[in-house]
Length: 550
Picture 1 (cartoon, helix red, strand yellow):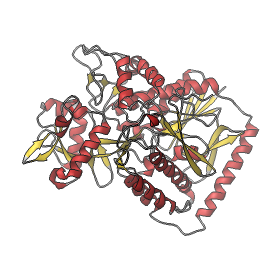
Picture 2 (cartoon, helix red, strand yellow; picture 1 turned 135 degrees about the horizontal axis):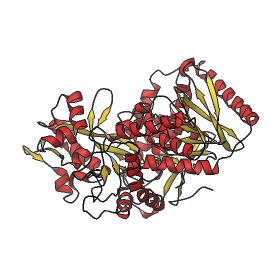
Picture 3 (cartoon, one colour; picture 1 turned 45 degrees about the horizontal axis):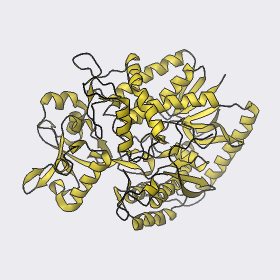
Picture 4 (cartoon, rainbow, N blue to C red; picture 1 turned 180 degrees about the horizontal axis):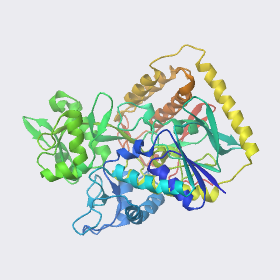
C-alpha cells in the first residue's frame, strides 16, 4: 500500500493527509505541535468563494480576474482558474464537514467585502475563520486516524530529505531527546508554512520558521518569487511580535487616517477614491509607508489610525469580535470608542518552493502546498485566498502525489537514511567545536527585515548581501536535544541569500516588490523568478509563467 508523508498539520497539511487517506493510502503527518498551534489558526479574515448569494452577479471568472489582477499578472492563470472554479464546492463541502461559518438572514453562508475584490465573496466566522477551519479539518483527520489510515506524529522536527538516485524516499526528523528518526515514504508533501524564521517583526507563528523550505532548497528543490513578501497594512505592535488586525475591519467599513492640519486625513480615500481602504495590500502598505515617511505618522510615530468607532456597535463587538478583543488585550483600547494605531508588517510569503499547478516541486518525490509553495498569488495575495489556496493546494498535492509516487525497498531506504543521518552528525560536530556568535539568529532576522523592507533599492540589497556574507554557517551552537536549530541556521543563510538575490535581479516594481531605483513595471519581468542552489551556491534565472514539471 502507498505511504504518503506529510510535513505540517495546518490547513494544507491536514487537507493533503485527509485526501490521500480517502484515495486509499496510509499517511503519516509529522509536525512540531498540534494543529491548534499551527499558523492556520491565526487566519482572521475568511475564505474566498464566488457563492453569489448577495445579488452582485459574482462568478468564478470574476474571482479569478481579481486574483490575477491583484497578483499583478504574475500568477499562473490556469492554476488560478482551477482554484477559483473549485472554491464554491470546496467551501460548501467544508460546511458539511462541520466548519462553522456565519450565516445571513436566509441561512446562506454570509459573505463580506475584502481588499482588491469587486464582490462580496469572503466567507467568515466572527470567532475567527482559522479556528473554525482548523477545528473542522482536525475532526476529519481524527476520523481518518480512527480508521487506521492516518498516523499523526507530534514533536518531530524535519531535518533533511532522504534521497536515492535523485528522488526523495523519506525524511530524517529529530525527536525531543535529540535522537534522529528516518521515516520512509513513497512521496513527501511539504505543508510547513512560510519563511518567517528568517525575519523579525512579522505576524506569523514561530512554528512556521522556513526550516523545511530551506532544507529542501539546499537539497535541490528550486524556489520561486522569493522577493514577493506581503506586508499587511494593519498590525498592532507588541514587544514580542506584530499582531494582525484583519482586513475584515476595513471590509466592514473601517477607515485609515492620520492627522493633517488638525483634522483626520483619510488618505486612502483621497488617493484611491474607487477602492479606498480596500485597495490590495501592497498598495495600502506603501501608502501608509509614504504617509509616515512624509512626516504624517500618527503622534509623530510610524503608525496611522484605524477608525472603527463610527461603525455600529454590533459590527465592532460582534462581527469584529476578534479585532475588538485584540485591541483591548494588547493596547488597552476600546475599538468602539477610540481608533487603533496600526503599522504595516511582514505577513505572508507569496514565494516559496517552486511548484507547478499540480503541486510538484523540482525535487522528484516532493510536493508542496500552502504558504511554503509558490502558487496562486503572484506578486501580491488577496485576503481570503490564503486559506483557499492552502486547502485547495493540499488536495491537489495529495492527488498528484498518490498518482505519481514510487516506492523503493526497505533495504534501499535504510542504507540511504543511514548515510544521511551520518552526514548530519558529522555536520553537527563542527558546531560543537568552534566559537559561536550568540545573537546570530537575531542578527539574521534583523538584517533580512531591514534589507527586504517595503521599499527596496540596489545599494541596500547589495549591502544586505555583503553583511550576510559575514555570517558563519557554524554560528549557532548545537546542544544535543535541539541540534536541528544549528543545521537549520546553515540552510537559512543560503535561503536568505536567495531571497535578496531574487529581489536584486528583479529590476522593476511589481506588487509587493517595490524598487525605488526601478519604480516602473516592466514586461521584461513578467516572469517567475527562480532560485537554484547547487553545492551551497545560489543562482537566479527567470522562467515563463505556468511551467509544468514532468
